Length: 458
Image (cartoon, rainbow, N blue to C red; front, side, top):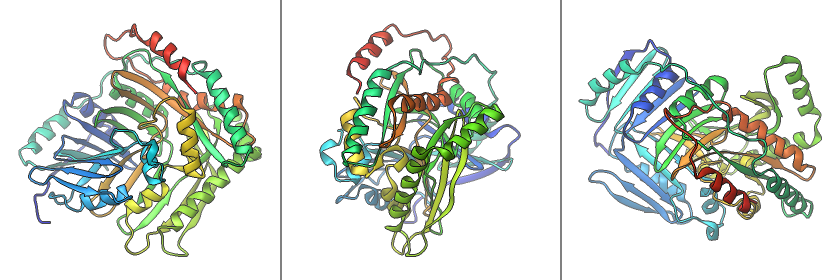
């Protein structure tokens, strides 16, 4: 379609891209997304168009261009068709997908929630920061001057006090029981692996942009994000991508499975790294995850192109270190990045093997929907590029609640105490860097909320 296009202006950037983008987010009065993708930090604001994704179809809302696209059993294919009808040229979509999208992708419709499974926006304006420059983009050319002024004013705020949430004890007994029950089901042959998670409430209001910046300084994520979009607020430091699909059809996925703490002491961290390679449970968990990722890519890629580029190296991700691999392939003719995402979602490292059985067990074992946790924050470009980060190591805010969440991979040789400790190790990547909102105090209702949650968890 011809349609409208983005007006652009490139200016010199003399400030830190992450701090600048976080400051832009802090000052924004509209929905927005910050997404760090390798060497580029993108910040987008305002909604020109939205795509609301449900199991039965996708609703595109755009001025003068509202349409509905039936899913016919393939909701992400409907997303691709909807994006193909957008009017702006050179668009980039920003958005999220919840873990519950997996139910629609794996024939578990009876488990579907009434809420949207994914939400994408085409922004009115955005800034892309990389290589010492800032690319300003806006559908209204009059917004470029305003963006440049806002960029110049986006200074770094002084560092503020950080506080920690209690991650050691909350819900630990119920989590141990859930792990023991899962090991029993795995031993009975019902599945090979499942990731079970636990929630830790944050009992005070936090400043999400400041928390994002403090946490990002202490983490080395594959991707990071900060968003207020579609009813969700979140800041996260994703340890892995679900998929990266380039414009020329190269598909990457980077499963991480196998975990040990990482606290910056060289000798201790080296010993833990050596433990990872010696631990039969961790190696098995990782190997079966890589195998499944390869099988999933084979279904959307040209025959003979799927390969393991890197097998079982170690990646340091904040307070933990993981066994990590990379699997790649080349999209088959007629396939898109959305086909690759559908094949790989949910990430094997946040769901289990087989995925349908793991998702069912997760639904039975965890007391509430996961929502963004273990879903995706993603961008998609008009040229066919798709980049989807796995939502882990994050802090969430929705409907007046703020919380952390982390899980561990359960296989037949798992032990409840070790898996509990693994969740603590992962939670510390975020829990140590929470920045209270100015004037925030502990909410009176949080203790009662926590007790209520604890009585129903697992």
